[in-house]
Length: 325
Image (cartoon, rainbow, N blue to C red):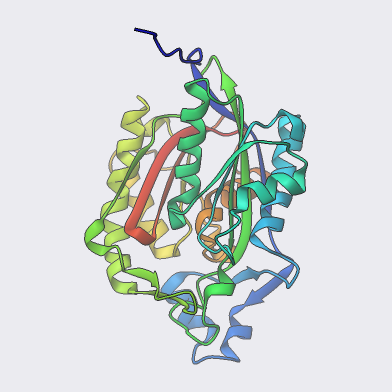
């Protein structure tokens, strides 16, 4: 019998470059209070957000993703021609056909890559990173571009204070390459099928809706243990983790996840991403956006051990440990 041959297995992958894009328009709570029944104190007390970024008319899921990707490639010291696979995590593409990944590749000048989109909502970046890591380790890819890009304002009712105060726009990207010294740990992922409609869009003409209290209870109880399991899967102690980057869903959720990780053995001085305060909830873009800002602010150094955990509509979740580029 003829045997099917497989490419040589690679020891591991690492993130060799990171980039982000934030739209220019800053929208604070006072601006929102002029169009809906809310105020700055109410918003801060419930979700912890002071301001967020809204995309301009020229900003799209594709254009923002390409802008973040160009920065990630530059940091990695790579050219578009070096990329063989493009993965875009998004749940807010205006049209599902064609998919975003090939369009991002086209804007960047990446020729004939393997390309596909992932819709795992706010867990999308972690799902994309896991897919990239696995593609590299199995030898099917050498250089993978992973993008999280969202224009949530296109899918949000601007007068609905349950959602419009939370969701925002932006993009983040990472370049994943092969290495002999693994820099990305195993993914711990899953979903809660019993609450799959807790965050939803009813149809192609609908807006985002979420059952806020149900999602809050799920996230504050279920996600901390997922983060702990990701550290165990990577074979590292929680005390070894330098940085915790939860999906930036809500400041109260971020603080609850951090508290559980520290209680389970994380360091009291664990650095925790709180980008939600000035960026809002950007779904699949939130983790790379938060980490890139922390690097720029000098809060995180290259080589730091990062624990990322994404969670959101589906209800999906995914977490992994990786080295900060």
